[in-house]
Structures are given as C-alpha cells and as structure tokens.
Image (cartoon, rainbow, N blue to C red; front, side, top):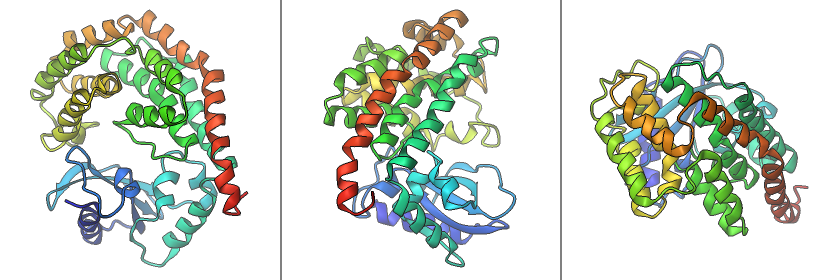
Length: 333
C-alpha cells in the first residue's frame, strides 16, 4: 500500500471517531516524512495525533483499520511556541499532513510551526528537553520490579539518538531510533560517535548471531503473552503489532543492523514481563550481556550516559550548525 493510501485510511478513521473538543488531526512519524507515492513498509504503522481543545482522552494505541495498522494518540491544542518546544509534537506537525481541521485553526498552527521548526533556537530547545529526560537517569530507582526498572532505564538511555535526530531536523522515530541516528552520523563522519551510543546501551560488541538468539527468545515470550489492549503497552503486544515488534526487528538483523535492533528487543521484553513473568530468565540473560544485569550495574551504566553529555552536545551542535547555511539561504535566520 502507498503512503498516500494509508493516509486516506487514517483520514476516514478520524472522520468517524471525533471526541469532545476535537480540534483536528495530523499524521506523525514516518508516514508524515515519506512521500505519498512511497510504499508503506510492512513493519510500519501510521501514527496519528488528534488535537483536543479540552480534556485529553487516554492514548488509543495500535489497532487495525481497513487493513492499516494505526497508532492514535491525543494531545492538547496548544500555542505554536509550546508545540515548537516539544520533541514529540513539533516534528510531525511541521510536515503538514493534516487529516482534519474543522475551523482552520490547525492549519494556522501548522504554518507557524513549520515556519519556525528549523530555527536553531527551537532545535536547541527541543534538544534541551530531551537532555532533561536523559538526566533522570541520575535518579534511577533500581529497587523497582525488574520490568519497570528496565523500562525506566532503557527509554532515557536511548534518548541521545533522538538528540542527534532532533539536531539534524530528522524524524525522531521510535523503534528505529538507533538506525536513524546511525544514518545521520555516517553522513557527517560521525561513525565513532555512533559506536559510543551503542556502547552507552551496552551492545556495541554484540554479534549478529547473539542478537538473533535474543530475538528468538523474545519471540517465544511475545507469542505467549496474555495481552490485554486495555492495559499499558497492551496494544504494542497484540498479534497485529507483531509485524513491528518481531518481524520488523528480524528485518533489521537481516540487514546487518543487529546492534541497532537491540534496544527494541530490550523494550519489548520488558513490556511482555509487565503482563506475565514468563521470560524473566531470558530477559536477565540479555541484561547480563548488556552489562546491566544487576541493579548496581544498571545504575553505573545509566550514569555513563549522563557523563556523555559534553560529547553529545558537541556532536549535536555540529549538526545544528551544519543546517544553518541552507536556513539562511531561505531567509529564515
């Protein structure tokens, strides 16, 4: 299916599911960054953000509609300055793939966000917001149950990749964040820093066969999960979402991007364990391989990421500066 066709499916879902205070909806994620004529990858969903003026409903998550896997989130209608400061909201809205705009206010907001999105001030603001989240690793609570502890470490520990993508004005993708950061860094001669990012996670030394074995164990766990879409992470663990979490990860390993696939294996393992303890031993082996198998080791690894702030800022500033010249040529200085 073409990206444009998938967007049309998403628009039809939006038309039939408008919540109180509905202010419009737009496509985010890769389906907003890819051209309409491109093929929608089988391992991708279509991310929708529904803007609400008033009480914001809880996230719907992933589900299939007319054969397309959608992921629907709600966000409050906010001023352009607030959106521009958000690493999560600004990239998608800046692309301008609007699905619904009842009174034209979303189009006006989108225009303002797109105009300012690439300015260094806002890029640095979004990078700083991500750094604030990374800094929470200094307060990592290693007394929490295993699955919760892993998730509270893995997400902020991976955010340096999103700093890189944000600095480069690129799509801050979720599952493929290490792949996307690698692409940005290789283009600018930053291969060494990509190795540092992998080392901060603990997988720089991983072999393809090693990661494939961890995925095999995850697959066994995933297929046994008594999933409940109403619970946290529930829609990420359904049979419909398997094409992303399992098949998409397998594709990365086949492409030689096994180390970049490791983070999503860790996250999916931990999410599975929030439903059922089956697989605890398999996750523990993965954590041991990453060098975070004990609470003390995880705390040390977390502090390594925070200690890398000077290097991260050096690289991100170089990426921001590299984009300043085209920006000036367009008259947006």
